[in-house]
Structure formats: structure tokens, C-alpha cells
Amino acid sequence: MPIAMNIVRFKPKLGQKDAVIKAHAEIDISTWPGCISMRMIDAGDVLCGFGEWESMEHMQQAMPQMIALLDSFRDHLDEISSELGVTDPISGDVVMDNK
Image 1 (cartoon, helix red, strand yellow):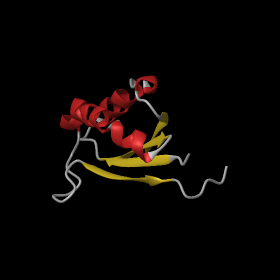
Image 2 (tube, rainbow, N blue to C red; image 1 turned 120 degrees about the horizontal axis):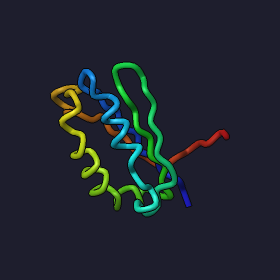
Image 3 (cartoon, rainbow, N blue to C red; image 1 turned 120 degrees about the vertical axis):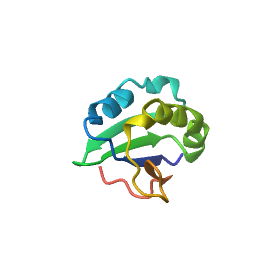
Image 4 (cartoon, one colour; image 1 turned 60 degrees about the vertical axis):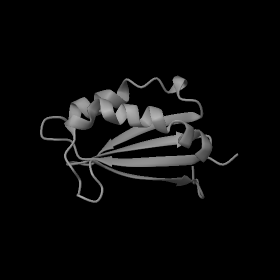
């Protein structure tokens, strides 16, 4: 079964980075079927969240949970651009894994 990943870039408002990190840290991924792991990196002005999934189907089925999560901290984010809004998401099947 292929593994899928989603990556989302966030731009926290000044002083709100910890709130965005905390919202993600409190997720119980065992309640998100097919979610293997969630990670986040601090890239200075932006945070990037990484989700690893058993399949694209699992990730798509979790979309309501991901939107609810975003809604819980949306007011802590600055707009990235008028086209993107407050997130810059991308997802797809893993085509190379060099562990």
C-alpha cells in the first residue's frame, strides 16, 4: 500500500507561534484512521506541518478533522497571500523514501 503525505505551510501572527504548535501537539493521531505520524518544523516566520498517511484515501477521509483543527487556530494565522489565504497545502503519494 502506498504511503501519502500532506504538507501545510502556516504563517503565525506575531506572538502566536506557540498556540499553533500547541494545537498540533494536542492531536491524538490514534483517532485519525490511517494517520501514521504528524510533525512540524519551525522555519522562522513560518511553520510547516507534515502528515504521513497509509494512503491518499485515508488522508482525504481525514479532511473534516484537518479542517476542524485549522479552524481551532485559524485566528492565530496571518494570510500568506490573497490566492492562498492562511495555508499553503500540498499532498501526494510518496514516490521515494531513502531511509
